[in-house]
Length: 387
Image 1 (tube, rainbow, N blue to C red):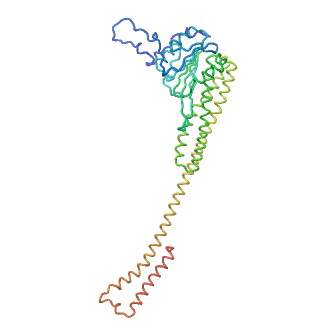
Image 2: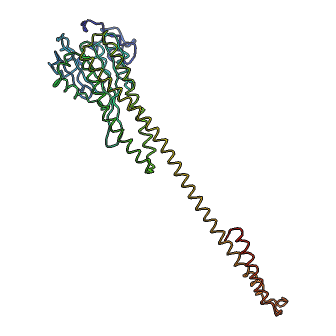
Image 3: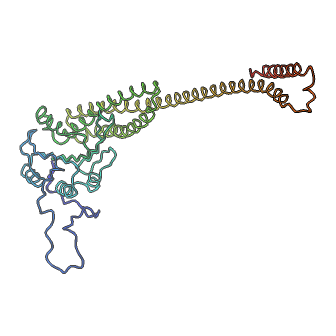
């Protein structure tokens, strides 16, 4: 194994953010002794970012440093040791100190600092850089929460940079220390495969939760719940994100498997990784199936909504037709009853010069006239189906 401590200091001057404020040079300042290098100051542990740092030898923890500086010192004093450093949303100064100590590539450090990366696998010299997207299912809001994990793997160190609540690597560390120290003794590669396994195993509860959500959505769709469309849309977006987290893992793991012979990977680790690859493939296929199922459910929901709208429009049309028929009947009877009223009103005016007033057959004629008009109107309206 090559000596990590003999490597040259990485070039961190490419990006302005990589220079510590104490290292900035003011061209207008008078000449004098240079300020002390920021790297010479010990790095203090930030409880909000450094989750845990531990030093291992032959699969057993030998020390638990309280700071990055102490971790660096103990690792230099332990040539056969391995450092496992876990960080959560680290500061820029912490990542810069790690980059200088372990010769991390500046592009990988920048990715780890900024986060929001796609899952990928990159090799920079002797260092492997892995980006993973973890997921967990939240029961209360019934949604999927995604986290991001960056892993630096070297010959004698492993650094995890976590962005988000998932995954919880303390369980991985405890399981390897207590239950499988032989695997831990295989070095940082073994820890990487254990982390991969934990991330992939964390997908199982998500798959189960999503399957339950889809079953509930199907019930809502066929019961006519108006909120089903929004829930389908939100879950579909989560499945797109889930697919982005799982699909690249298949290619990443096959890439690791392709390097078994080149990097002399232990046979136990080879079996371990193949098992993880099988689980990833199965999960990826399930996620693809979920997306297709949601697309089908959305199509069915759209059809049902359209049918319901058509039924409502048909019901409104029928109600309007019935209302029109009633209006026809009312109008017909109003016209029939208006005819005798009109005749009676004319002959009820009692003007002196109305010849019908002195006519002996005037009354029968008026009655006959009213009857003829009413019957005629009734026959006309009946033929037109107004009555």
